[in-house]
Image 1 (cartoon, rainbow, N blue to C red):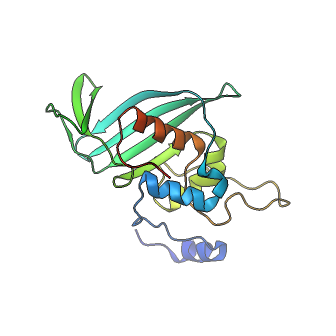
Image 2: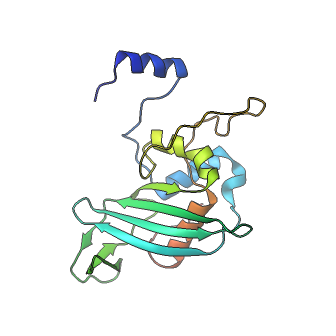
Amino acid sequence: MAETRTAYVRRVQRREPVHEAREKWTLKKLFKETIRFSKNRRRYSSSGRTRLVKVIPYVGTKTAVIHLESFGVTSKAIHQIFISFHGLHITERVMGAGYFRVQYGGDDYWIRKPDISKDLVRVRCSCKDFFFTFALWNFRKNALFGVKPRSYTRKTTTRPPRNPKKIPGLCKHLVNASLWLRRKGYVIGQRLS
């Protein structure tokens, strides 16, 4: 859809980039961007217990959406995590090594294990750090799972912007969930770092 002149003028005035839909993201690439955002994010602290809620296979679009929950360490927060892998081989035929089995809608599906450094991904977490730091920039860079995040207007001008370089990335819950998926054998590939 072509951008209207009014929308173009507003975007230029706000210095907003055009939605860069051609960018391709893997978990490893998003993690590298997270480190570029802040070297302190190289080693995230533990985010508590992680639980797999469900895996939703979309055979026609070759997509698997993995829904997890992360339970807070210091608070009783439960964060909803979504990692959507694209370009996967998903079948109802029994497959061997390199695949994992899920039951969905009464049927068994075999999904090729995504590679964290090769397979395309989109992510989302319900935590405030992700929302205020990465959600908008992940959306603009085509790395956000789901709809555009709600608008937020800054209430202070005494502090610098949260993400001045406008870098997409991962919160600690997404990083720890990715590591959990690797430990449990749902994904393959080298370490994130």
